[in-house]
Length: 109
Image (tube, rainbow, N blue to C red; front, side, top):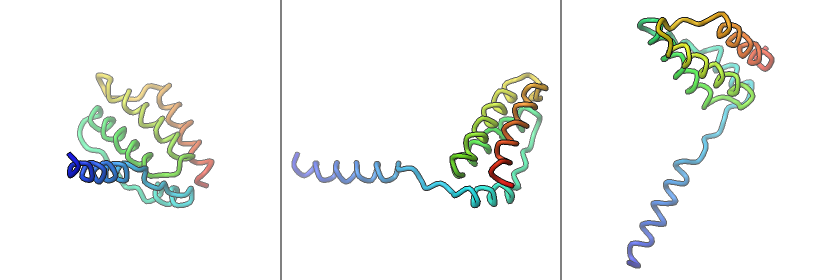
């Protein structure tokens, strides 16, 4: 049992460091990253909406928190869109996406 303890401690240390949050980009780095993003979804409208939602979530995990919050909200909206029968945004969802995009624009001028 004594020989097992160091292995458990080492494994726990590896898990803790592996799960540590990765450093986020600064706001200028985030804006530069967003300006270079060339993601293009494929497939039907539902598939595109789902891909966009996932992409937004991945991007939000990398960028500065101030920029990540509106991107996460956009990801949630696109996930709702993907869940519809046509995969098309409603007027209200389009308005919400525009509002979130404008919030990002407040930081990325």
